[in-house]
Length: 135
Image (cartoon, rainbow, N blue to C red; front, side):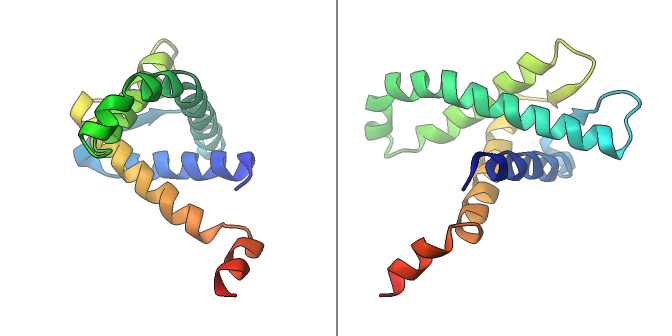
């Protein structure tokens, strides 16, 4: 997937997570809070989440490599939840951004986001990759 499509899919996944009231994840859009501001806010949050994942996530995944082996990869749920929580913390300094109620709810939200990204990766896979598998 291209970078722009990944950004849109992450923004969509974050928006889906905000629709689940039990997860206590909220997006506070730019003022005045219309639909366009909500979309722009979601895109910016997805960009920040991607940057946090690329920079901090890479370091955490390298440091936690023994835990990945020990837990058979289950630690990735905790790390992804932490990265989502960290994105909420980074954007909490402004009047807009991501608000997450609890760390463990961030872990559940990160699992939902990962599932949506997985499905989107299957749907938006380039056509030539699909054709190679059939031959």
